[in-house]
Length: 157
Image 1 (cartoon, rainbow, N blue to C red):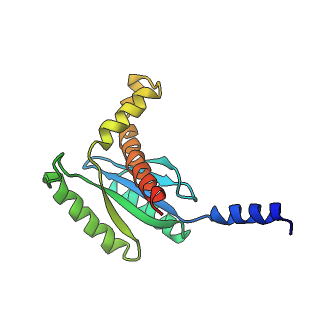
Image 2: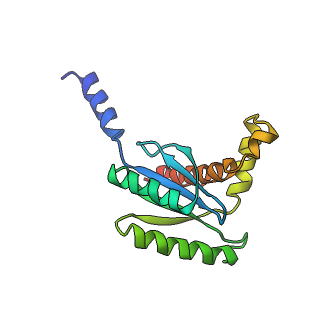
């Protein structure tokens, strides 16, 4: 092999496909879901689900061996303290661990994720009517959280 082929091979090996990271923005009405690309570089919205729909989605992805990890937004106040929603998320995490014991779970601070998602939707030029569709903000918030998580991991290998 010539040196150019060696460097191409090395470059390709550095882009090894991985399993996906799933981001969950849990809400009492809807659950926003996002997933990473196979290189774990970018986040894309999957949609919004009720609890049963989310568990079905996770089960299907587990059967296809697509999931590396699931991150769940953890609601803390601006000064890092727990609040009423934190207890709800703790119970949800217990349910996830019980239903999917083999699944790697982690939490990430979701402070401002909905606000940031709203700003992204506004900047995208979507009409107010489209932005207010049920679930659009939830899946966008999951995308924001997952993007931040992926960026922090890729910055510090």
